[in-house]
Length: 123
Image (cartoon, rainbow, N blue to C red; front, side, top):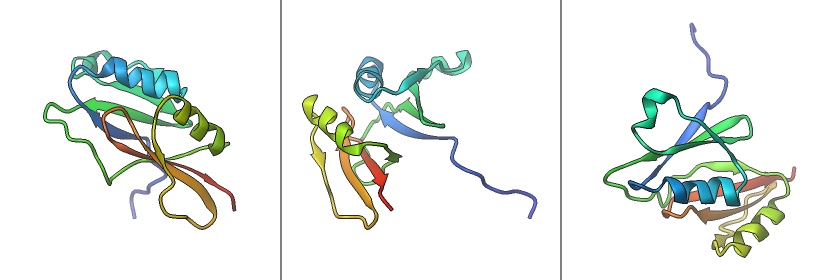
């Protein structure tokens, strides 16, 4: 086989027009992710990029935006309980969902209604 896969570079979540400041407040100010400057030739498209561990989350603008209610990224977390407390303290609803053997996890929505899973493997 001439090619192989070795990981995911980034995931993209959609957001509505003009939402960059709200994106920054959630992903940077609340979650603590570092903003990554977009390449100059892509800035005109709007949106914001963030570092998530060794990966990236790109928030892209969709003119006919509809939130992803089922499809979602799952973000690995250390000390998931403190993250949950932080989100709740910021008025963000969390949903424990169904149990996943070997992990603690919960779901939350970004400010636009996109589902995000946070999980910490315990085994």
